[in-house]
Length: 422
Image (cartoon, rainbow, N blue to C red; front, side):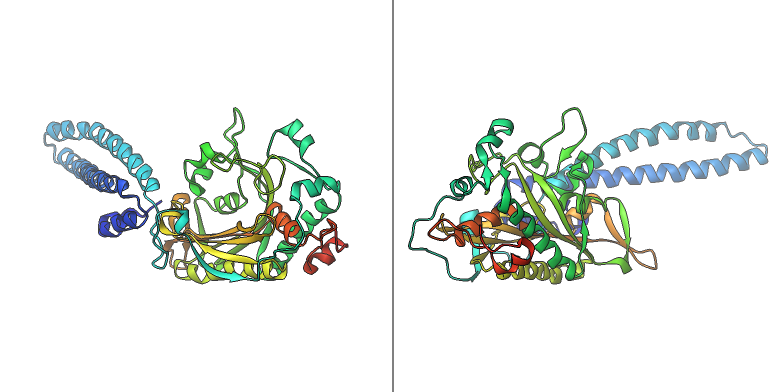
């Protein structure tokens, strides 16, 4: 949620930000919010003045009674004040809800170095590591190859669960676990605390970590329950600090979380009918940091470095893609995706996503620090994928596939798998 003080003091920054994001249609929303805020502040002054007048009248009535003077007019005036306050407070509360709703629709202020562009076609490749693998033999589709080797079953999964689900078996299932353990161990050694979060969240905390459209397009709702299956462990890892004042000396908070993730995947891509790349259910290890505002860009670089080190050790070509202004989500000030080279597909595909939400997410959830003098500050939240195993499995199958259909395992994973090939 955007800071209302930004609209009060520097509305031109918000309007310019909307232009950079190619969301000029929301400028009217900014003007509307400023107007509602002015009305809210006027009502607040009236309410405060009435409360002050009520206190003054109470003293005057007591004094009049002591002096045995007529206090009837004072009593009559005082008797009308509670209803006036109630009416004003109701109007004020209604306005406040409308303002809060608007502040969630106005996007975060982008970082000054974010490339300006209208959509995903103008995202910018900022780094390329490794040479794309282009074998001389014809690569098998990863889904077909896994079924041939008895390592996965998509047909049976579709029969009992529908498209976008799968059974992993034997060595590939074990490789999946190896990727999880490897990335978790990697981050624990760097001082991140390991957490396994709840797989469901109530709507109130969930609405603090995602855009409202996600409730329709991304999350699965549990019927007749105020619960949603999580789309990533980032969501409960951040939401757990809702309405919390974190002692300053405990910062930064660095967590690595593992969970199953569940997504509807409604959109132009849909789900894979036989494959692991785009599914309704998958395993993911996430890294998050909650920190002081002045430290967040330092930790943005740290999160990026962590993920790069993991993928460098897996010996697969990748590129870093920075999202342009028009392709950034509402909460994000900056985003960089790591895209793996997929040899069969002949292109790079998203494997991880790094975001700095600055104070936007924390403000919605009321996550603050508190210092020894009891001063409170809205914190910054950052998140980055460590490993989304299904996509990395596809990368390993496509980049390490041999002419005879054998799949070699990256050396870094050998001690976790106990085998070197599938």
